[in-house]
Length: 285
Image (cartoon, rainbow, N blue to C red):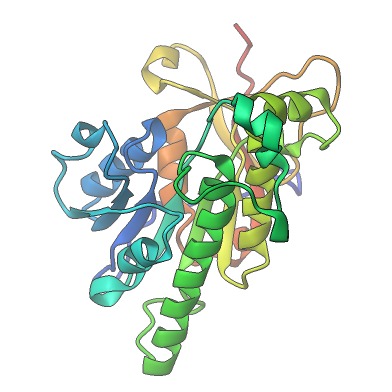
């Protein structure tokens, strides 16, 4: 590991010392979320998965032991509250939910992808819209966790000092300026996805809840790169340069899943931080 100030020292494996409360995984049936659930099962850490009733990927996590699936949606607060506060609460939350809904003709006509505040034009039933997943969903999640933390403070039964922590995975492209052509095109083509991703991060940062936000680059299957000499490095200063050609760093999806879990531990130097994990010294192919 390089001795630069922006390099985060390697994290030890997260293994609770007491009887652990379950870890809530948002987006558990996705490519990364299913790996996280599998890793939790392998470590014998109980988990909860908030899954949409319409999800077609139940088979990715249905066979695993040690967990419970809650059917619900991030945009409905009572669904989120049931997964967070029910049956004794949770010990931490990993949020890897995403939305890449293509912009529709109706969005152009009504400019729903630019809606905000009192002029919200995204209907509640449009559950795939990034506004609902990344903004309304993060507000609901923070509200439920704050309620759980307040209840644990009153009972003095909190598992860890500081309350429940959120680990949020977004993407390294969010480090680009809002005026950059990549940000502009992403918003135009995918219903303002980068705008609402940033807003969701801001919702978490302003909630008062402990958090670690991870902005990885492109996911890669670790098995395909066993022959490449590489090292997982986590930095605080990994923002992309806003040039014409944007190169995203690569990271193994299994390494990222392990990192998401390890970031849940109580460690002050990764609390309330935006971190950039990547494989270092990996040539682009």
